[in-house]
Image 1 (cartoon, rainbow, N blue to C red):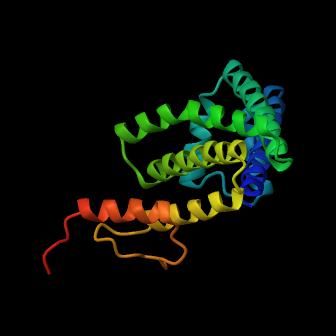
Image 2: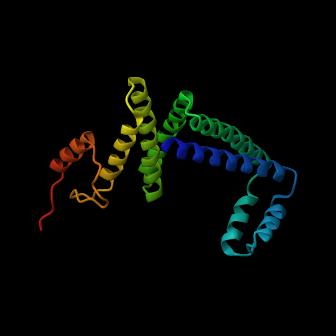
Image 3: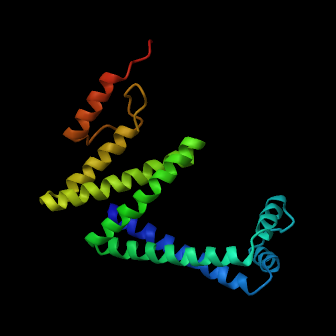
Length: 198
């Protein structure tokens, strides 16, 4: 189930990036602002709106060579995302390796962005990407050892349960289904957390 969700995410990401690349190629041959204003009218957005005006002002600063580089980068990353998604959909081992390498290569950048300026979105992205890497590596280790992968998915659910606890150990979600490995982790963390006075 988790692999299918990851596969769908990467296929969708690949298609969106390919569309972005094609959009950049189309804009290379035309006046950027006129094309943007036309598309804003097509989707019924007012180009004179202050947010759209600010977007158009930033878009004016983009030169043709930057647009070309953006298009090429979008096509390359779209190809990688589509390969990842297709491989994960068909449960290919190499796709798991590729996904771990791609995501892990961005983790230091995400971590430095969080350290520079912490926002909920950045912390969430870092956490989700870390969980994806952990899941794929742990899944591969389980497959190599011949262990049933459904037990790993139960561990993943338990880990999400653990992450949904507040500092006092109270569950924000139901604690059912906590596996022994996660239960030990929860128990050891509760010993380290001081309970606030009542």
